[in-house]
Length: 496
Image 1 (cartoon, rainbow, N blue to C red):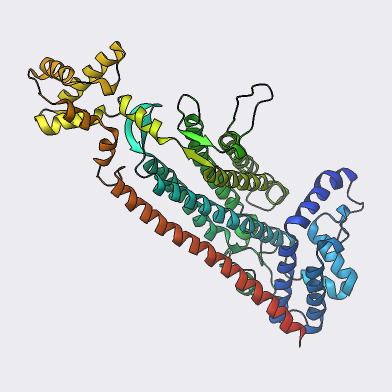
Image 2 (cartoon, one colour; image 1 turned 180 degrees about the vertical axis):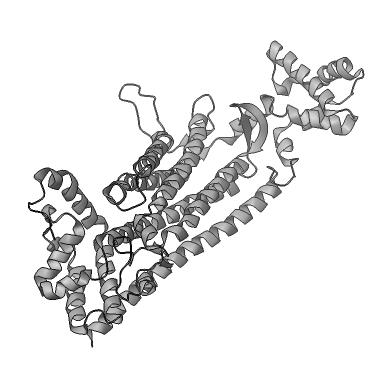
């Protein structure tokens, strides 16, 4: 394999490049590598490129290796990569004249491109399943809290009352979009590079569609050069991971604030908190802190992949094949941890909604409803109503009063000042307008926090979640059918 070269690989290359790569591939890609070889040999036989007796010897050895596992291969970093180690194992078993035929009509370049796609596929599908579990948890929490009132914020200041269910449905809808991005990228990922050769294809009469089908791909990539050198799917998934991590980080930040003593809306279970080594009263919500922070690691992975690929030629090189995906697997691990922590937190968090309702009634978040009611009932412009209510709030703040202290006299004094007449509202009517639950239930427009609108959102999002779960099951089934077909065809050849 190194006939062109006059010396062995230097020990530094082996220690810092070959050995780490071989060890990682042997753990991550053993079965994918064996399956790629099985599929390729079946295709060579089907196309009459190799004889049946040789194909049987190779397939039998590969099948035996698949059952025994990677531990039977004596990994040698001087053989440069995992594929050469596996090929060397095969040749030692069946001889060079037979085993050497396995590499007919292909290159390590198209093998590497294909196996990376398979490894990304193996990583993404479980993440999509966990994302759907998190979405289900959110929908259950939203349904349980669809009528629980709390303050909604803009600029981190009290703005308007909403329900906790309405808030959680906003997060759930954002995660739905994150799922859509990840699932949409799958069609661009799940295409086969095998047959691309070094980058220019081959003169052998190969069948790329056949091999793609055996390995669970939707189709082969049309252009052989693109098949070998493209790594944009790494960029796409890394960006989607970072976007998902950002969604979750923002959600965790809200829960983190709400878990403070000053808010006191959120309580995390003791099992997901830690204590202080010095302050005995402490109960620190650490899962929320990690959920906030870990999104930065996903961003770093995207930047790493982008930077490696930026400015290199559109051709095969070690930048593309060896370095571009280096931090992608860290991103996969971080994404898995984020989703596991999110699911755990959603199952271990509780809410103090009485305090949240009391706060929403008193912190002036309902006064927009007061302005709207003045417009509806008194026939004044909204800007006039805004001036009346703004003046009342100013008087309350200067006097140390809350929204619950607003009375008809304040309303009449302000209306006389701005529209030259009193409104004459009763305290009972004023209290009803300023009640936070009435404010929430009065917002019946499409997408509002009213209970009926929230129920519509829950039904729609639940239906979408069921379809998304079915899509993942469909992908799983496609991969399993292809796997069964591959092994059955190997068995049929061995029975000839």
